[in-house]
Length: 254
View 1 (cartoon, rainbow, N blue to C red):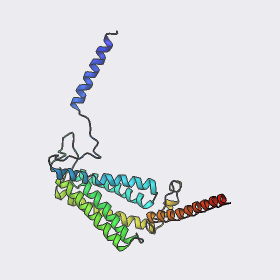
View 2: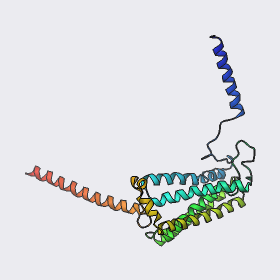
View 3: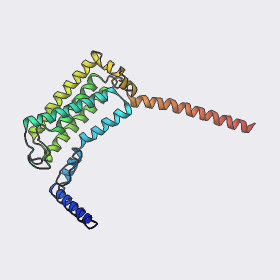
View 4: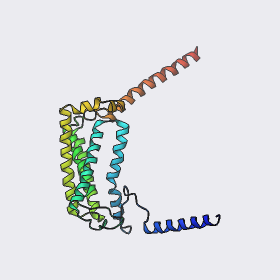
């Protein structure tokens, strides 16, 4: 009986080895980017194409740290846009120019429309509409500079997908178009929710009140407010510290 157990173990190990050879390990595609390592510019484009993933991390960080309903709304719309992109790809079924051929195990899916271009177009469109129509505390210079930055980032990320042979120009342009339409539509829906009082009811619900979710981003800057609070607290602390030092010195003199 003792001699049978090692034989069974060896057989199981051999079978597992065969399975591993037939089916190699999967890749986490969240940050997986193919590029030509002989081309330094392709390396740069690969890093630039990770902008949507970076923005998702920023979304989650802001949601947990700031608890602003505007950020939650924008992130929810971003996820809805990604679902729309997934459905459109399944309907249009256009292959990518290089990566993701149908039938390949490492298939990255269909390429029309480009998810990266759609993501960035949605993000840029919504934020630009919000800055010009909702963010009353933003100066004209800040609106202009941030719009230029967002549009430039969207253009570079979209170009990176063509440069790395993940998409054709047609796929990227359609992604930009769909992202712009969905971003505009989502902004209109959110404005309607505010006007109809739906957003106030959501904020007054138990889950949102329990997590201290607020709606202040459209009329105040948390960076400026926190700096003002810090300045007042710092002055109070320095005043108290100076008075205590004076009191100690005075006692010593006595």
